[in-house]
Image 1 (spheres, rainbow, N blue to C red):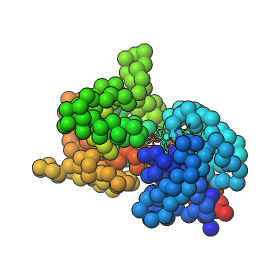
Image 2: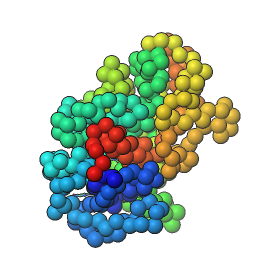
Image 3: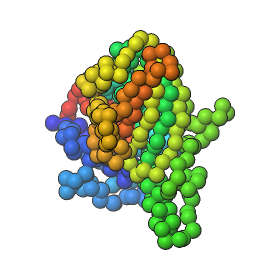
Image 4: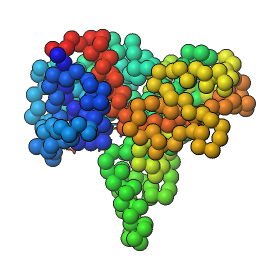
Length: 341
Ligand SMILES: NC(=O)c1ccc[n+]([C@@H]2O[C@H](COP(=O)([O-])OP(=O)(O)OC[C@H]3O[C@@H](n4cnc5c(N)ncnc54)[C@H](OP(=O)(O)O)[C@@H]3O)[C@@H](O)[C@H]2O)c1
């Protein structure tokens, strides 16, 4: 008994993590298919560290009929072509791209935060997965919002290069090597040198001077957590391979002390509080790789505003920021809506 499930983009950073996490969490699978572009047709893709592989098929001529669900991680352009075909054939799409996130007929889900919104998926047979930076932030904010009402959030991100796909990781690796051996630096994927540097620019610029990545954090947080919450974001790419970090300042409706927030976060689903006020008593991105949790550290009062709090939060962007959240959505969809075949 299980589902017939497709992983689209199975050769990519997120797709490979999806395969690994489906196996780790023993997702009930009756049949598994892996698809990607024609370039990858026939490639044997490892399923995590199970020792098993799955042969990659060409998405162009894949027949979606009879499949229960598909986790898509192929970018917006290819998703625009293939997701409607899959959804129309009766295969529910769980999409990692930004294409459908703000579509009013598509639920945008973080299972720890707004699981009930999934019921709206029937309008298009598509469910959206949020941006990686939004996902980890709302997991940390949700229990605090329930306790004291989040009014305004100021967030600065420190986003790893894996958020820009395989090509982003290759560019950091190659530039680091080029700098060490004195070769000319290749700048292709990012707008400036990323090795030994930080870049305050992710995705394209918008008319108001913000970037699309920053806009995504604003509108997605409203859609998932609460439309009343105000967010201002600065998104920065840093030379870290995997793991996004965020410095978050929050203004609440009601008073919430750092100690009360720590007690709440200690019990919150999806959150791991690591907060000792001593050397190393906090989490850094290298420590979160391969983990499911959103780690919260450095919780402290912010006395510059009424009812203010500051914290640091870190998560594996390929997991909670993408693949894990998508698999959690698949689990939720199965529990609530789809019968196992
Ligand atoms: N990385 C993150 O932290 C993160 C977080 C949230 C959401 N996302 C989203 O997830 C998606 C994938 O990201 P990624 O980091 O996994 O990128 P990636 O490592 O560059 O992988 C891209 C995947 O898409 C496939 N693909 C590209 N063009 C295609 C086409 N025309 N038709 C079918 N498949 C195609 C590639 O297949 P080939 O190998 O055959 O080219 C590969 O499997 C993107 O929409 C991204 O925005 C990523």
